[in-house]
Length: 624
Image (cartoon, rainbow, N blue to C red):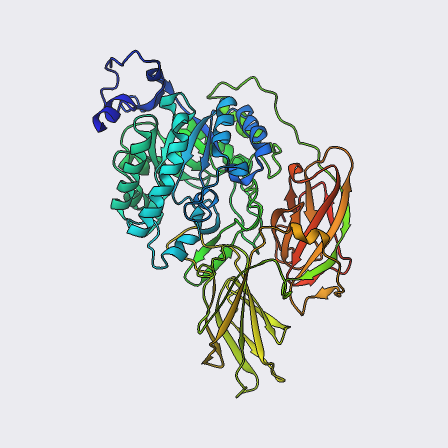
């Protein structure tokens, strides 16, 4: 079977120019491979070069998939690259989800209908600035000692089941079967992970070959250096690299040639923008730098994937974090990425400049060029408090436990959201006493139900003083701000540990886990009386209603004047807001989340209620 793969698909020998007599069956007319002698790809036997763009289906409502893909094709792209997110498709072991915004097959079908080939990146690890790099949180629960991204038996057991599910579903859409998928990636930038487990990557290759066979080209992606390619390279897969505008193009491709001496040059992630973390300046890359580097690559005959061409949004709690030992930087909700298409799908000057460059090397399609879509300016919405998070009858409680030591979110089966850790304080010996804890990731500290301060992994604040008069009950509300998505420290359990009071360990903890997957029951909850300003007695849900006449339009929610929290529109979780820290201020609200007539806005505000108690929907974004 392997010899068949070797000969038929990819024409994987330097003698590719020799005639190969293939069966007359119609399926043989479809293929994608490498002409090593002439350093080019072959699509259905003919020379081919792609200029692709990354667009992750899980970062946009499915109602917008076709719009975004058509705009990509109009820019001159002939392919789209997408990750497949394991945590989205298998939220709990064996429970697979392929519906709604998780309908991968529909996305791939639309791509083909819009005349785009597909570069599929199924992981199992994807990074993508997503929580735990797209790995499901329950891996850390099912096997706390699991060695992620290695041949570890527990990891391979679950990764094999997941990959087989994905690859079986996409099999009809492989190029060899007439579909759009021309390439399938093995793992993701594995050379950047210290494990360097080549047995693991070989095992992944065998799983993919078992499903894909000779119907698409297997490839790897790594940073443009020999040290990264050393562990990322997988024999039998085509080795490609990634880099942005700040490098020497020729030197970068020379790194690729160390492991891929023949075949077309490929940049699998060319960065026209960059990701942004809370508390830093919004990251931008100048258009001139992008077009200059793109032109240099295309002049060399390279194939290029632009990451991201459309970034979209980390709706809900899906954004991840960067960091490692002693460092932690969570990503903002927006994944605009300073990409050629904005978060709302509008073309930028960068879009048209890139199109002009592509047009010098590939034929441009006869498709109308996109324009900026109209946006809704729906004005201010008055928000009234309706329920405290700590309400004893809260429907958001999904788990409860007690133990001598604090348990992790994962142990409590809390994926994303919050856990309240509570214990009794011992009698004080000193004044003040010092509370110390290892926090993942942010803690609001309450004594006898009243706010005493904040601990923060991001700001490296792990101690606060507790002054006389002393209370009896200590409560720590821990927020998961996103698991690490890159690097060697991705085993990122959430919660608290090593909690001491002036050096004395605190024990006997009660833990309450909260999940915010459904806020619909708050529609009929009565208002309560809570003052504006700092929320000294715990987070509060607020509700407001607003009316839209006519067809709903995309809009942006501006939380200026509020503290930190999460916003929901008609039950859709827009993600985290944090205007005091920024740089992102507004949250993107897609029109499919809205409806003609009455709409509902619900907040979980953690820290501060605006004096006006209003948030406004406006027609322009503010990403700082």
